[in-house]
Every structure is written in C-alpha cells, then in structure tokens.
Image 1 (tube, rainbow, N blue to C red):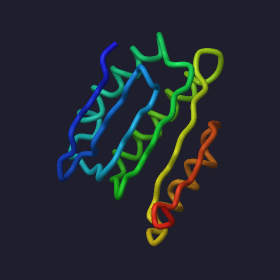
Image 2 (cartoon, rainbow, N blue to C red):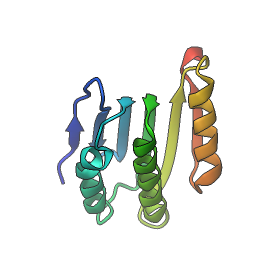
Image 3 (cartoon, rainbow, N blue to C red):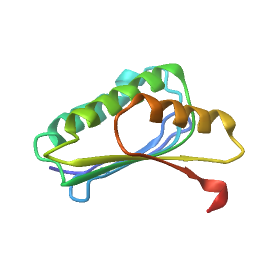
Image 4 (cartoon, rainbow, N blue to C red):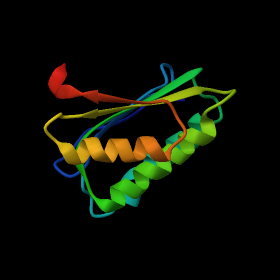
Length: 127
C-alpha cells in the first residue's frame, strides 16, 4: 500500500498518511466547498489501510480552522479509526492547538469526550 500525500492549499489541509509507520497527519485549514469530495481519497485510503494496518496508528491533527462540513468528515475519520482500534492496531489521536485559540482547544476537548480512543491534547504555544 502506498502512502497518501496531499499538499495544502489556502482552503484544504496538508494530508500525509504513511501505512508503514501508521502515522496520519492533517495540518492547516479545512474549508473546502466540497469537503466530501476533498476527503474522498482519504476515506478510500483508510478503507484499504483497515485491511492491513500498522500495529500502531496515530492520527496527528493540527488544524488552524475547519468548517462544519470538514467537522463531519473529521468525525467520520474518528469513527473509522474506532473500528480499526483493537486487535489489528492500537489507535491514538494527538490534537494540537495554539494555547491562545480557545475554540480549537474546546473543539479538541469535545472530540476527546465523544470518541473512545486515547486522545492527547498538545498546546503548541508551550513547545
């Protein structure tokens, strides 16, 4: 299985998913007009990855901002990872936020309370 790499644009995030390491990265802004269209490749990639995942899978999210339709797609990504978590792969989420951005911290806290996965919050202002 090949890695998935999509460069960022002013309206879409950088995506990098490496099946050999199990590291999934999402960075930037996500405000595409058609979020489902943008994330389609990612969902297809995850469906294939679920068949032969790495022993450990870590989703690293460092979004500055995302719209409502991207939020729905992000939740669907979490649901896919919840299905993957268990015998095949140990899944975790790392949510990066700027300490001055209360909205992104609160959003991370909300996701943390909604999904049943190890979820680490990282304040990038403290790094």
